[in-house]
Image 1 (cartoon, rainbow, N blue to C red):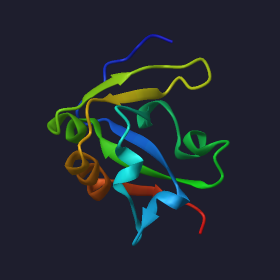
Image 2: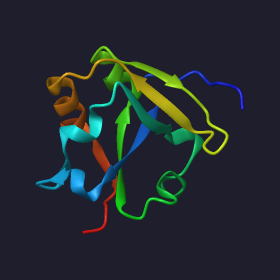
Image 3: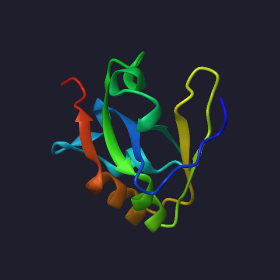
Image 4: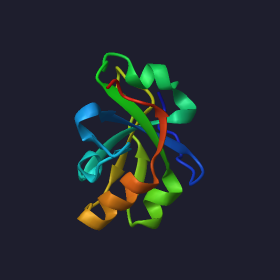
Length: 111
């Protein structure tokens, strides 16, 4: 698959393990990776993003919001996941907390 442009308005899906949920929301620990793995929502479905991950839920953030925090967002398709993308950049605790706080649940993880 050809690499696609990621627009600021594009939604990004991030899987959240149930252990990374506190007080009903994802914790900052779910957003700390320098190369944060996400899926481009326009290229997948929530069910496809969660396939094979029964103990996870799914949140959505926008590429524009990640970029406003100094992050780079690039489509990085994999053979097994053509919707795969990366949010690249140093994620300080403040950035990770901001991403966690502004993430919107798409599918809640199992209890």
